[in-house]
Length: 377
Image (cartoon, rainbow, N blue to C red):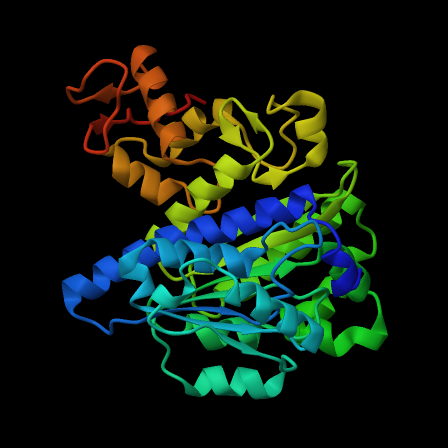
């Protein structure tokens, strides 16, 4: 799908994607500003979008750049610090974006005027970011396919303090690209040459669902090897809900950012099982079932969480917050899931807990897990 066609109308998926990014920006900016005030660090933050598009869909709906700027204008603490760079190699897009930005109410309140450029995303931009010491930056990379997206590009920004990245991962095109020798260079840049070669061999006998799991898992591992500990994918299906279309991938070095984004993605999920979010947006869920639960396909539901906790923390006493922080990474559960299951485990006599109010389970509640019973042979 070409960029021009993509912006002819705003799909449900595009609106959810923009909502996730803009909501995270708002929360991230608050955390960064708080840290800067506390430690008297640099008083600037930045938002960079290298594939910004024209700003509005043809139906008038705002895309991500305008949503970000609107949030900045509304909050003095953000508008006095925010530096923005919007880039798109298509000059028609940048012209349209510049016009849309100029029409935003309150734009004059921003201390730093938005910068709009029209450059090809490639080696020069990567080198520029690699050589810069960036202020806290939220980096959004949303290419139409995969050209320009690379491990080096992501790492060139997230290397610095307070820098997080969100990028669009076009699963359909990358799935096909891994089997296409004509685009080997692009795939090698995205996964790393050795990992991409291994992937090509592994994928041949796999079914569609297995291929997706392997491709996304390998991408996440490649990103983690760069240094960031926290990588979180969010899946999108096509309009009919029959196929995976793309993922939104979040990358961060800090647990706080991971926790915030996980809560946002959980709320934007179109379905859940036992109050555990699917981390997926499927238009078919919304049309057919409202937000009722579907079969939870790719992750383990709440029933399994109790068993995992009993095994992992057997014989230990520790607070709820520590249990959550140690256990939730790379799993679909958010804080409220742990509180729900721990309350149920306490009711069932599977654990003991320090005194707390009924029907609540605060972060500081101490939980004691029994030792595992040895099997008698």
